[in-house]
Length: 470
Ligand code: B12
Ligand code: SF4
Image 1 (cartoon, rainbow, N blue to C red):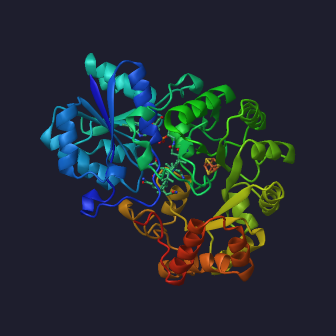
Image 2: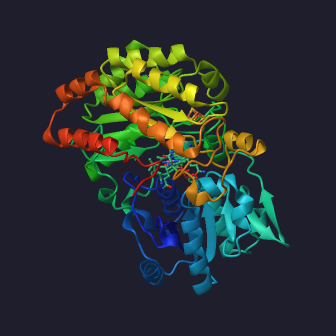
């Protein structure tokens, strides 16, 4: 049995192929590949995204590897590219079983399963489901009995709910890193200086309820943590085998469990593993100074905080955080010499020009190391999508526009104005004389200076894209 796992080429469906500025290894596919390989199934990862593969190149890989099953991953932004590739494969090789998975398939299993070129949709976590699919493929092909899938049957889509998630995530094999070409994925990270970088997953699921987020539908409402030992072993392996020395803990709730942070950081320090790392956090889960000191000592140099808004009602309603927690978190990071990146969004329900102005003002008061400003995207599968959809405020359900242009209607603000306010926010944050002087003082090398100057030039010419950019 041979399984190919494919990430689609961005822009292939519109004949406008590109690689976005930031690329990560496809961790979901690598996890599934690791799991299948540990069950003796020959697996191949075809990352068309980072390699910009054309249809002819994809076809050549299929002819070479001869898979019986092809699994395709996709976010909402790339779903039409995924459909385009799948349709051509199905036309050419009708005998190949096509399985879709990932965030869009999980959010809209009915839409995806009703495509004539899709055989099965995996809803949520994919390791066990994909193995079940392979087993049933080799057996009686009665896929309908598998948990956590959607399938087209008798002119409608049948959905089989998942009863539980894979609990002991320590027992999952490492992602199949050997099937990826690491150096193709932004090997250098903004916070990693000249170190070789990779993301790493240390937990799954999230107990919080931010309205714009899809984490729950993929990984559930409680966090399943990996143990400190397991994380450390993976870091050591990545350092030894792939020379990786800067890590990003990409799971959203790395700072939720403080005792585990202490264990991880103490192990890094005790075992003298010289690395740097950064992680994501929520302002209300940031640990106390004692733990922050350990984090810094073990190599943590930056933390991403989703602040989102400067309006307390929005924070309470859409994120369950407070202005005070935001201020406290950024101050704590400054006091402990850890860089902070704060992300803000414009367009939550109830937003208008004045609340946007308040958010920009708040970003300057917080004054984190860096900041980014985004226009809200109500991705399907999120409570925000349902909220906006109910009120008829979604301008477009053409998924290719999601994250490329504003797709929501606001009370007193056109989409062009929204774009303008976003550019203005970047300018108001980065063009402060105090910020420019501080940044020039902190520049460590010529490349950083050039990057900073380029950001300035892009801002002057209003060249900050809405989303992915090219
Ligand atoms: C790291 C990350 C990125 C990275 C890398 C993205 C990538 N291609 O891997 C970067 C920074 C580039 C990025 C960009 C974007 N991201 Co992003 N990102 C994430 C994040 C935090 C982790 C992804 C990850 O590696 N998870 C760990 C792996 C193990 O999980 P997984 O990929 O979901 O895979 C599992 C299952 O989904 C399933 N599965 C996945 N594929 C397949 C395929 C088959 C065949 C099967 C059977 C199963 C299956 O099985 C896997 C293993 O269990 C997630 C949130 C999250 N916690 O997952 C958001 C997330 C995926 N991103 C999201 C979004 C919106 C984006 C952007 C559009 C904008 C943005 N906010 O940055 C762009 C789009 C990029 C693109 N290629 O289209 C949304 C997707 C929503 C949606 N409906 O599309 C998520 C879910 C976050 C959220 N807010 O809800 N992102
Ligand atoms: S944004 Fe982060 S904290 Fe909020 S629900 Fe999603 S994963 Fe959880």
